[in-house]
Image (cartoon, rainbow, N blue to C red; front, side, top):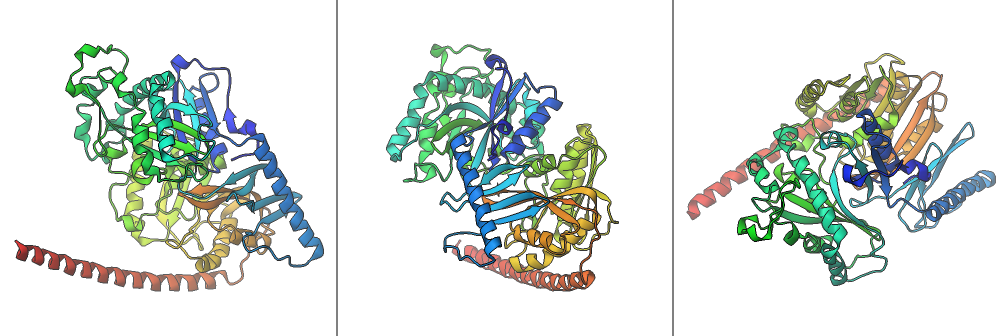
Length: 591
């Protein structure tokens, strides 16, 4: 959430509703301002910018809320100043979390929780206050109205899940309600003329996207035979199958029941009796007398054609239809997670061991690349690349950027190579200008010369699966020293981190003469709270005491851990194989 309302949307003269399609795109909270700007940038490059498109952040915070956040920021700054002047330790309440402020050349950046019971965390970007909160179902909703064809909208890489908009209903859950009351409100929407017309236009949009599924998602489709009779369903000759799902954030007042309890109510909002037998391409009129049983629509929770999704955001309700065939790819859709589904943006990796697959969402990587705003000819480096999503997204951004990345995990070697080759194949097919390459390296001892990189974008390890806090405390100064060494003077680094304190400690300590903080703000990544930290290289000399000795010790410990993991993995595999043989013998005896 961003303070400046003008930065929350790109709006122009009213668009002709008959010539535009309406989409919604769920967005990680904290990234709304970046996503809106990135979507409009992509539409403008495709020739559908001002006058042909409109991008709006739905349910953005009101002026009163923003004013309250400003007051809260002022309180934190005042408290810090009092601490500095008194030079005494002020004990905080047990339920109060730490808030940090960093000042550099009269440029104050504050980051931390609001401590008002709202579970909101604040940060700043270019002077604007940005807030976020953790939770898997906490998402922002971006409304896109454009005359661009589906082939262009579906290829905007900052968009992960994409849905067609049916209808928006403001402030219908202002008071806590029982399940029966909420179900009745949602089911009554099927009698609303605006909802019926919204379903008609949205299903028409869905049919145009469905015609591209085989070409776009071919390698991932598990049940491609289901697409063979799709034209008959679109033309109304065969009835469609559908299911319903729901996404509800933590601030919604309806908390007396589970989210899955609303699935039936949302499915009941579909006016199938008014749509059965009609052609979704609006070319074949519907004749009630010619309806036969094969043309009747039905509910199918597994082999469905389209999925209706209801979003309960605070007091508001949004109805939409998913435009991505998660059910045909055996991917986690809205129904499985009740939150943001899997990101199935190409290029795809169809091989490899999922246990070692470390991959940032391609849409999130694209948001970080757009935030960095690389220029033509820039060299962009990801020091902790994982699978290589960030450098590949930089190359696919069509900005004539060279993306380089590396990772130390030997288990990702083959998967990284496959992912990079698929990305090059996709780039060549789309005639994009950019290049990327992935290799194995140690982020604390890079093989690049000094001042060779224009930008560094990296998703630093956080969470117990990647690196615990003790290891991260030892790892961060060494990594940041290498970041400062390979960055040119004036170059910037954008780091996504779960624990920002170690970065601030380095900036206030060893790195004070070479790096300064520009922006830091919180974002929601997969339900976890993370922070985007933007730093800039100053003209100074990078020095870390006994750098190579510290790296050598970390390498030795890492090698020992890998050996233990390999032996335990081999033991568990052998144990699993013995159990499998035992189960087979028991089955044979029972027969």
